[in-house]
Length: 105
Image (cartoon, rainbow, N blue to C red; front, top):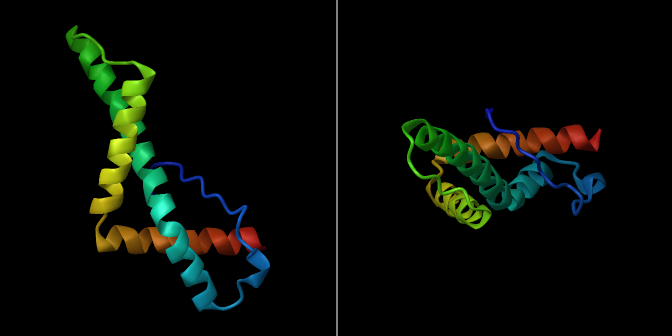
């Protein structure tokens, strides 16, 4: 589904209560915003690292402070969360349902 690792937190979910397809879909819709943000942060981190490598290759000064990186990642996460297409959202929702099923087993 994605080339980025998506670590979904299922600790606050009562997996035993998930029985019907609607239960899984409802839980996936609830988790979707947080998962979109995490995926956006992963994209931001990868992008940051690539930009730093390119800047280093050109001899430009690096902006590599931890706070700058964190700010960049958070902004990328917000942007990704807001601008994800319907298709991306649906694919991610399907992925969450699949992960819920696997964790329930």
